[in-house]
Image 1: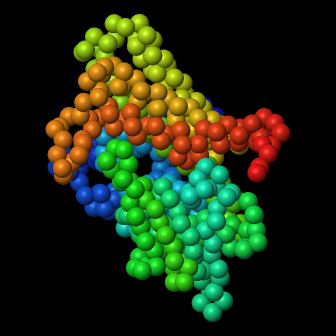
Image 2 (image 1 turned 90 degrees about the vertical axis):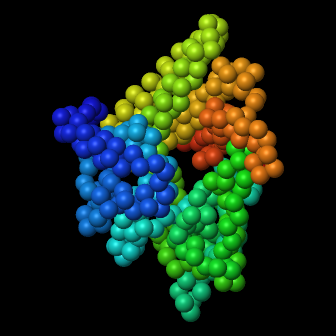
Length: 389
């Protein structure tokens, strides 16, 4: 399949651009209100391919158009992207009709926000090491969940969490896991503790489940099939959204180039070479993403078993190198904050400093570089499996 944009896509682009511009001129937007506004006008769930859930239909190329325009207009960071781009396609692939009818409409309306309960202390990139347990209560046909999740994005805002938990007590590794849907509104049963980062923000959280009372009533894909469902979800994580991500990367690179030209750093041949290399690598990533989407004909797991791992390696390393380049072109000024130190705000960061610090995590979260290389080696190249301790 040749991936390209046709006349209908350009009409759709104009509609998307006009809608975004009309609603982004009024200053700061509350993130929950923004999700509901997106939902009211049908901009959530464009790629679900399912009728009856309140979302407008859009082709693959139109999904890409929307994602690109959203990034290009620098619209607000999404609170609902986990529900829309991860949970929804997973439910469509593995959920029951009852589960889809219950959970997809509120996501499409922007009314229920989700978080992802995967990583744990001691089981971050090695997802098969999950120790959070869920015991089925035969009287209520629900699960009592015990354990801790960490680095849980937006858990402090979420209404629900999809949790990978061990439902067979004597199981190990990939076996005996289940994919549970857990309501976060369980006071005294679920505790969320924000994690303050070097950037001063707290997007990530620790989540504690008290097994005596924390409950989950929904399991997706059947008990014991959690690993298959979880791996399917990770494939959806790197579909159309990667192209929107690259639009944001291009904007960041453009700002780095502007500063390098303005302060003369571009005169350094080493700096100039790195700027050109960043540009060339970003163009390569874009065409590779378009190629894999075009060859699959969908926004899910494109390009074969190793494609998501290859994509993660490429963009994670690229973005970290951009952060390093951003402070390099700033020179000594990169060590100085934009505002004076106060007790209330010990430090502030400018955009380049935030980019440098936050991008350090890109090669760790979502599966570290080491894990991605192991996946490619074992599942794609057929090399001997890495010994496990």
